[in-house]
Structures are given as C-alpha cells and as structure tokens.
Amino acid sequence: MKHTFFNAFLPLFLISIICCNPTISKTAKAGDPIQLYYRDPAQIELISPKGSRVLIDVCDPGKLSSPPTEKDVLLTTHNHGDHRRLDFVNSFPGQQLDVKIGKIMMEDVMIRGIASAHYEGAEFRSEGGSNYLFIVDMGRLRIAHFGDIGQDVLTPKQLTALGKVDIAITQLSNQFSGMSAANKKGFNLMDQVKPRLIIPTHIFAPACTKMAVDKWTGYNSYKKSISISPEDLPDKTSIIFMGQNAYSLKLPNADY
Image (cartoon, rainbow, N blue to C red; front, side):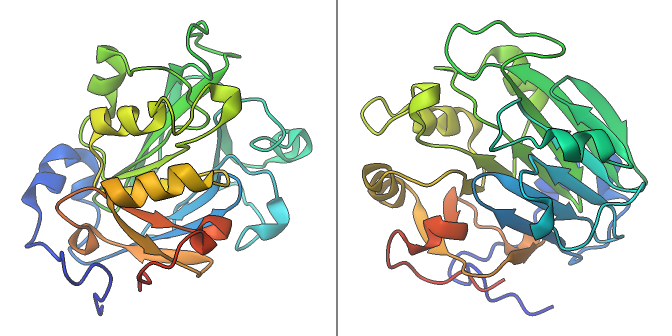
C-alpha cells in the first residue's frame, strides 16, 4: 500500500496501538487498512480489513456503500433525526445498539457502547438516554464516535473505557450541546482524549474551524471514504475535514 497521507508525520511502526487493542491486533496484518466513509452530519461507515461493517448514526441509508445485511452492525448514539432513522432502525437486519450501552463482538471487531450526555447535567442512562459513545476496535485501530456529546468534561469512568483513542469522530461546535468557540468545550474534551486523528461532525462554525486548524494540523479530504491503517497516522493530534467541512478552509489534501 502506498502511504502518502501525513507523509510529513509518518511514524515508525506503532507498537503502542497493538498493546492498546490486544484482542483485535492479532486478527489483522500490519499494513491492512480499514475503510471509513463519512456523510454529513455524522454518518459513519467502517469496514474492517476482513470486510466486517459497522454503521453509526445512519440518517441517509441511500448514501451507504451498499445495502445493509444481517452481517452488519448498526450503532445509534441518540434519538435525533439527523442521527437516527426510525424506519432504518426497525428494518435493520443485523445486530445493533440503538441508543443504549452494550457490547458486540464480531470476528475481527469489538464494539462497546457507554453512556454520556447530550448536554451538561443530563442523566446517564443504560438505555434511552440523551447520548452514547461507541468505541470500535477494528484493524488495530481504536475508533470512538462521540455522537452529540455536550458534557463539560469526560468522567474518569468514561476515560478509562475509552483508553487510547486513535480516531475520534466528534462535534466541536453545536448550540444544542452548549458547545461553541467561546467556551471551547469540544476542544477541551479532545484535550482529555488526545486522539491521533479527529474527524469533526456537523457543519462547523467558521470560528471553530479556524480554532481547530490553529490548534491542530489540518487536512481536507474530498473523497467519500478514506483508507487508514495505524502506520498512516501522525504522532500528534491532527484533524481531517470531510464532507461539507472540507470546503471550510484551504488546507492540504489528505491522500489516503
């Protein structure tokens, strides 16, 4: 595989990733990438090196790479129309965690759902709460989708569950979560997590976009999907803008 993405930051083989995800690390070979599709505002499709597929916050099923099957998994962070389609949830043929905590094991993927809050002060619930975080161990990477988290800080229990996150998929500005450039809430949460790559969801406010690229190295991707292995990621936190966010600023293209 030709690695041209983050070529200025390409690290040596990252033993720490394997140590963090021992269950999954033995199921994928070094260099095998995952495929990550992003659709606004927060729809994610993850495909493992062995072909296992995890769908997160699907609001437009027509933009999936292929129709769902009984082998796929669906994860839904909260019950808002831009993250959840009730007809899709009800007809989904595979396993799912629909606005609740839980665990799902696949051949080469491990998934955990933990409770969080859409806004500060909201009650954490095991099911039917305001927001959930999903941790997906796949292809020697740990990917965390934060939904529309609106907490001021992550709890020690959440941070323990998250562990070492490679890719964080999260909002950094959202008025409905009390998250703005002024309070820097989304940025402070990522300072706690310290992921190696951030993929922001929702359409960014210009002030937050500028703040993000001032804080982290920024890249654009105009592709429908990117192909990632641990060897592609930078040592320090970087951010890649996909979907409509890719047009926010003139940034180097991320060539995965």
